[in-house]
Image (cartoon, rainbow, N blue to C red; front, side):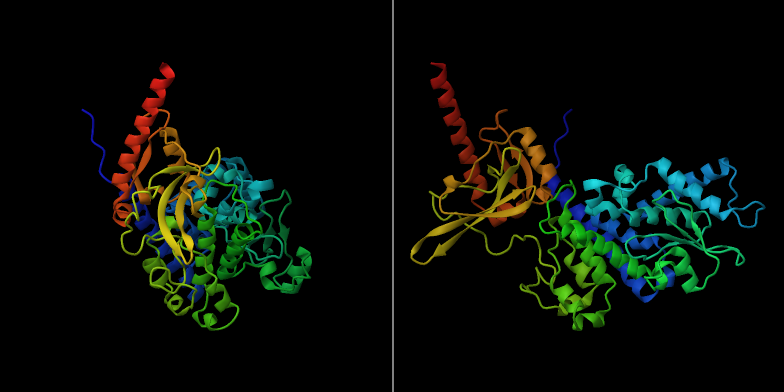
Length: 465
């Protein structure tokens, strides 16, 4: 017996995922904010762990992945005869950390090269612990290394060395020096002869840095800030060209929330903290429920930040798009285009009309604005004649590609009408939300499909004569 499709399944799944993600991001902000108040209660795990929620993944899953990775490393070290306890005869800390680095390389961790280095998701644990683990950046390499080390009893923490991230290893024996280790290189660790800062800077060759965290573990909030700026270095390049499948705007949003979370509320009253908060990016469409539970509840000082659009919906983090206002009735029978109609943004870029509005112009014909949803987001097209839009057809493959490419597709469309394999007459069925916003378009689209099919049949009949 064929099972009936659940009604509104795509929309329900979108909102369920948005709620799940909002819970995870609420947790991320709690962790980062707590880090500013009580750093001793946290480890380097928490620095990047918060970014997990911004790709709708539970931090608990990532912690379980790190535990499993450390367990595998422990088994490998034991099989190699390495001693894991400083109390055991023959314990060799230097040999141990070299073996951990080698284990990571066998697992596929390596420094990314070329364009892969510029992936803004290199510091997001679901990416670096998943299929993309073979290509990441030094910050993430040190994050994994330090996480494994702590789980096998080695005190390891990242440094804030200018131009690179190294790992500081604390010796269990006061008579033996601490170490500075480059996880990404083939070099052995530097073994310090003393814990005197000037001596450590000199032996590490970074006397010019003249800062303790160049050779000692950096403050966790400093590492959060460094991770955020690593992301900004990619997402705010001029010009920025998206090269990766994951939404770069969400990465930029994650970095901005991370910085806001470690920000001292008193700093927003002065520059540059005030300027930063006034330039916060839009909430990505896939994070549609974040405003209250993630931002305003957790970062209440954001309520006091002025913004170009201070409405409750937009607030300091403006929404990428919202269906607001009274329902839009079709202005006339001659008005063309409807929500769910396919258009083309290029030979390989399917798109559809997501919304429209008519703008009256004094002493001029009105301008129609069609909001087009594609892989790049929602693009407003200002046109006077509907024929200026390049219309497209809807096949099953086109529908799948658009759904995969457009991050908020499931929020606004819940089904498709595909009467022919060639896509003629095909259209998308808008969600209840859009049907209420554009109450005439569903019926208009059905009539349009009938006309398209009749015209296609007539043309085929003429061609067959």
